[in-house]
Image (tube, rainbow, N blue to C red; front, side, top):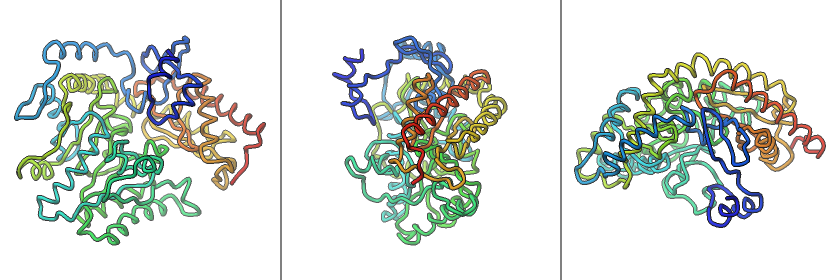
Length: 452
């Protein structure tokens, strides 16, 4: 299987030639928070797949629903004035769950596609309102909004921009990463400063040109950057003051990840549009969408065709599976489990990792967390080696110890399935600490415990 994979399968965000020499790890089964590979190793998945298997692996109910829907209506589109029951029911359920007046969903096949939808939607919105020059969307450095040309342009990831450039009319401001960039400022002062970069950028560009601001409640792929408490209230004040649209990218933070249905509720954000995907179906089917507020939906829906859509928008099988996933989350009290059981226990154990000599900071919101690796806790120093060298070595020790924990630069991050139990959290922490110990010993042996 490794040979066939190397010969024919192109992996995302991978140097495929290097992987071909090493050989991919072949996953064959999943149950709860556990994966089994082709060699029989039992692996604790600390990343919920790719931030998505919120209800865990092996939920037969979702397969049963998919089969029933395939037998009844395997596919039909929602173009040409047609609809079907799963898409209607899912849109209605999302309106019930989403905060405020977010009552209308435009479906897509992924979060990347949904963010492409958002670009066209906000520009069309302002065009209809007689302000076609309002086209600029402001985003953040190291934000992640997908890897399509639109989503990748919204994101602030330089390596993505380097491979094909980015579309026009998208600019970036700084991220609220106090640990790496806060210097001598308090987190609260730094949060205000970073938020106020939005106001400065609006005034620099001209409010008559700015259409929207987009941000993740917590920057996930940027390293689980939990913003200071002052950040989102100030962002909200600024978008309200200048009357621009606010897009909350909830692809990672939605559907229970932060201890509420949506991260916007956790951080007091009032978005006009929310991007959703991943936890919407717990990864069992590819589906995403843009949940729009009443005003945006009304404007887009009452001035001719909105010339946008996808073959698989509201796919009946994906929609049916998503509905069953939401039923399970709701009826089994999974969000309450996160809030009252899993988060408090994991937070206590996670914070204790900060006593490790390699760890400078341990942060957690809901069930997404990060630890910052550093050669000097007191100064929050970076390593002298190229950024990501230490993080990659730590990740490799995690994989060797049958724990999936991802690195972003020299930060280690987790987002386990929401159903993780305290005894499984104990395993996660034990394997994480062992991996940190082994990484630290290797760095000492190789002379890499040096500050920049």
